[in-house]
Image (cartoon, rainbow, N blue to C red; front, side):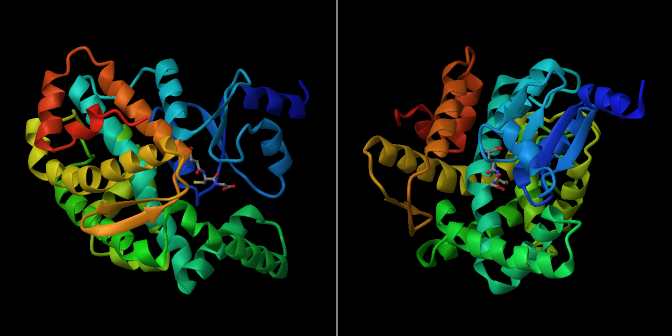
Length: 344
Ligand SMILES: N[C@@H](CCC(=O)N[C@@H](CS)C(=O)NCC(=O)O)C(=O)O
């Protein structure tokens, strides 16, 4: 077989993931593929392969996974859930229904709220805008001459800064978003003391969702500086870039003393009231909504995707046959009323 065809043939035997080192959701799926030992090629989306990417993409978003049979998958949560069905070894969804739900709820919080501080710090201050746009341009145009790369960095910075409002980053919301990251780091640092992964000895969906947003924070000068005070989190991020199982998961009773404060602070007091208000605003066809979170007024334009994914999370709860243990945990963390409420 000619060398070129052999190469093509080999490519068809594995998954191809189009992504970027600067895209938390792409890094999340790449870590998952690495953990599962699923044969794959990480293909950074660059100027050179942009047409190839566009021909495959239904949405203009990364990550995009092309399966060996040619099927294209997008959106990190369904990508992982689909691959989990096809590759059941080393499951990342806990066996126990209550911990499976907690893991999904933490992932949902990370995708929808945890992304806010990452994105806000990325594009708020000059120093971070300059560093990240340069890093992005280096990734997108690795073969361009320096002058063209600088031009691209300037264009990216100009394009991305106005997108801050998409995640609700504004003068009014800035303090709450920044405080939310610092509180999350303090609580997670304690939880990861002497613990390899969020739910115990191996990674679950919660780790993949949480770590990638915080990995993004290590690429930005302001958040990198903040994160140097959290060595357990930095070690865990390093582990999560190429995770290996180290042991069994722990039951809620063993996790509770440090995981419950994290869930209350981040899921109960931020993600759930915000996502619920977001869904209600969409239902009422409002163009903007406000909600009080941790005593601060937070205003944002509603996001359809967040309403759909909150609905999907609630569906996971509603479909559970045995949920008395989970109900008890959700009562203890004060999340239950939000999970059972009609919102859509
Ligand atoms: N819900 C999606 C979100 C994906 C997403 O927002 N991707 C960003 C990068 S992290 C993106 O592609 N933005 C547009 C671009 O980079 O062209 C997922 O989980 O995959």
